Length: 122
Ligand SMILES: [Zn+2]
Image 1 (cartoon, rainbow, N blue to C red):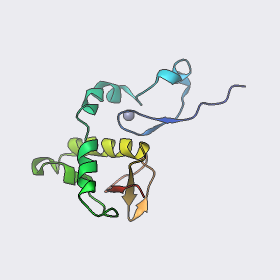
Image 2: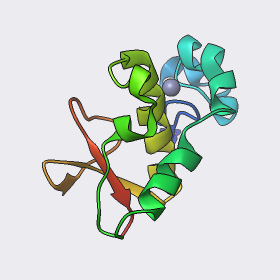
Image 3: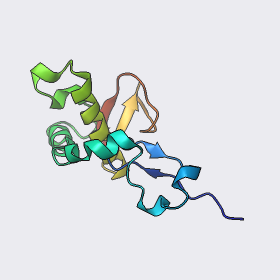
Image 4: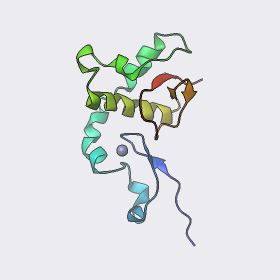
């Protein structure tokens, strides 16, 4: 009996992808969790990783930031722009660089809802 392959993270949104039957033939090549992430992969080039890390570098090591702080004022209420920052935050978690917190607790990056804070990994 074949064992089910380990899950991995979408290269774009950073959400965990759990192996599914439809990926049986090409799991090794699957990089994105779905059509939307594959289509949007060019947003990776202008990802917010550097801005997040720069902002955190300016603060005390234990300080947290709100993801909206990396956006210009005009975009702070823009849900789509915010999602791009959140995606970059998830990717940074997978790189071992930052942590995502909710109510002071480090959370798993695939599953949160609602407001989050970011800080450098301890
Ligand atoms: Zn995705």
